[in-house]
Length: 233
Image (cartoon, rainbow, N blue to C red; front, side, top):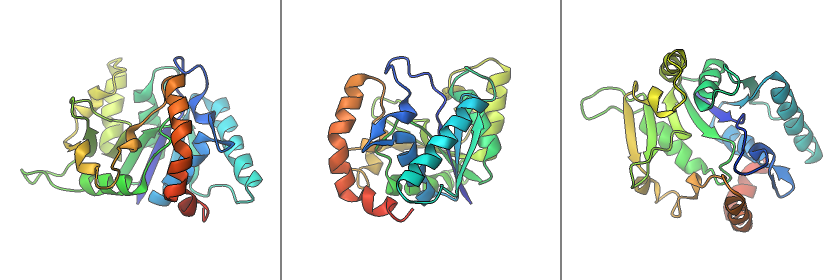
């Protein structure tokens, strides 16, 4: 069983708007994210800031599907940060706790160009053995500058939850801290270029300029296959 966890509780201070609700084709970005991940996984966990925020996102996703004439997403489940305002480590802990799959793909709600083929490949890479025949506990893309992409990664759900709990107990907000406890398959992003030549999978929305760029790229992205995949959802 495959799970996916979407962190949707961030404050979006730099962007000045809630990222999950940014409109792409008059539809909130969170809805597109749920749709694409529903095709790659058996369940999608949306992690909100708190109960009220979770109820709001659930209503928005339900209404968006109703407006489109489709059923509510059958694989979407909602929870909220284990420690309010603590950041992504608390969100990951809550999401991993709610999920049921052995492996879970974790992402933010601000990546509009997620690609099924890349996600599938990361699940495969997380399920491999290291050169020392040790089972990997995560597959994490790594940029040429050494920067990890922890919110576009696949984790052993149980091991990541335990690592996040330890980080929270120590007051650690940095997401790389729980990663240090895992046996990580470090995946150079260039290894994923055959599946995503421009590596748009990792393009996220932090500023208004990022949003303008994403909106300009969106029609071409849609024309290359997202529509055909999600219409059947």
